[in-house]
Length: 225
Image 1 (cartoon, rainbow, N blue to C red):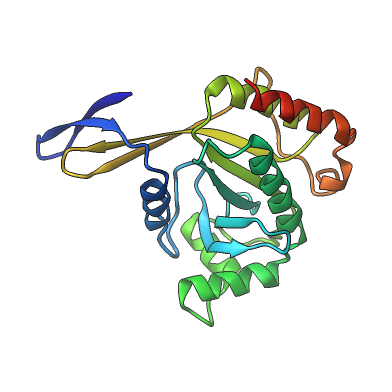
Image 2: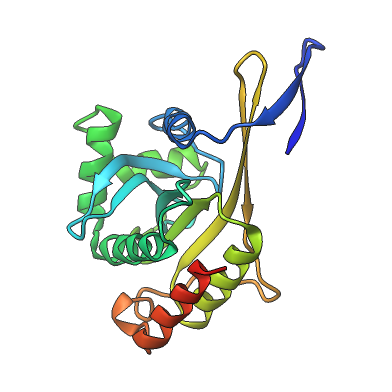
């Protein structure tokens, strides 16, 4: 995959695929700025980075979208890892995100923003240009996974996750770099024929996956593709 990047001053530069997981992870984290929207997947207000969950998964980016939904962003760039590992981390992350309340999110945000007096709801409403009217954050949660795996694998996986009602959304990630070192990243949502809607917090618990044996057989089959 390649391309050309053109700059406002008229300069152009060829783009080549950037496939170093370590470099891409560092660049993605550097793209996150406190109290500013992060727009690679959906516009997010970042409130934390590299947060450890009680289940062992690391959440590189934690944010809140314009509807007040808590979003945990994971990276799936080391494709030599079994896909079951990625799925396990995703399920652990959604289970953890569901447990967070507004007070905990505000504590994360104040630490990340280096402002011990910041108002989470105030900053959230300001960056999205909204007026606060009895808004409740944390009512819904979602995990977004930026992945380098083949698109057909992600489509099959997304269909399975949607069938079980898990609020885990995969994005195909494409990363390119110019000769001068500029990086371009594009995240393609893995959309199915019928657009998946966010599941309410009352029905999205990982305890309601259903037939776990079928789930494991499915992911084992995916690893052999």
